[in-house]
Length: 329
Image 1 (cartoon, rainbow, N blue to C red):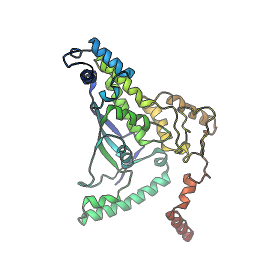
Image 2 (tube, rainbow, N blue to C red):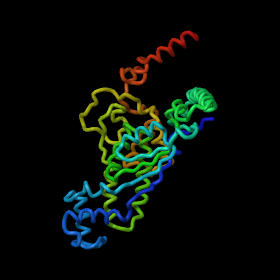
Image 3 (cartoon, rainbow, N blue to C red):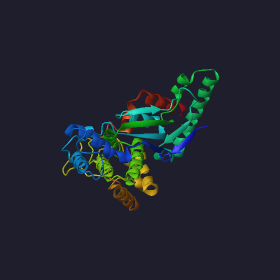
Image 4 (cartoon, helix red, strand yellow):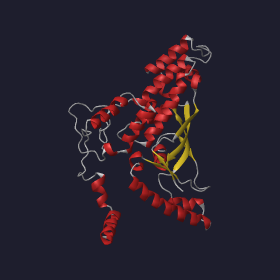
C-alpha cells in the first residue's frame, strides 16, 4: 500500500562532513606555501598576526581565495527526496551516492506537492493508478523478474536517500541558485535544510578565524537579486526587477497555484528558520491580499501557447483521452 507524504516535511538532512574549527588553519597552511617558506609565518593560531592577515586577504580577494577552499569539503546525508529532486540535485557539481532500487523491492513511498495532496479527486485517481502499478510490480517479482527490470514502473515521486559531497564553494554556488523561488521547489527545500544545518554548526564554532571565514562563505548562498526565467518570471517577488523592466512573455506557470507557494506558507507557520531575508514579509503580503479578497499579482496568462492549459492540448495522449471521454458520453 502506497504511503503519500504531504509536501516536504519528511525530508531529512544530516551534516556528515564539515571542517569546522579547522577551516582557517587549513586555509592558512595552504596559502603559507605560496607566500613564504614553510618555516616562516609560524604555526597556525587564531592570534597569529600572519594567520589573521592571510584570512583577511582571502576574504578581501587579495590572495588565493578561489583555491584555498578547493580541498575543503562539506557532505550531507539526505533522506526521503523524490526521484525528481534526485535528478535535479545530481546536476550540481559534487559526488553522489544514492540508494539502489535494483537490489530490493521498491518502498512505494511518495512525495506529493501540497497543492495536489489537498485535491481529493486527484489523489483518488493517483491512488487507483498506483494500485494497478503495485499489482503488476508484485506479479513481476513473483515471477522472478529482476528488481533492476521491474523498477522501471515506479513513479517519479518515489522517495530515495542519497549522500552528497562537494567543495564548500561549489555547494554555496548551488545553494544560491537552487533557493530561487521562481525556478525551484523540492530541491529549494533541501538546500534550505542543508544551509540551516551548516548555520547551526557555524554558530557553535570556537575558532574565531574559522567562524569569520564560514560567515563570509555563507553569504554566497544568498546573493540573489531577481531572476530572468519564464518558469514563473519574477512573480514570487522576493526581489523586485529593475524599474521599467518587462518580461518578454507571460510566465509559463501560475505561481499562485504552485506547490512551492503553499510550501512557503507552511514553512512560515512551522519552520520559519528556513526562510531567507525578506521572505516572511513576502508571504505575509500574499496573505494580506487574500484576506482582503484581492487577487495575487501574476504575469501568467492561461491563453498563452506555452502555458500548461494550452500546451497539454498538443500531446497525442491528450487527444486520446478526449476521444475516450467522448465515447463514454
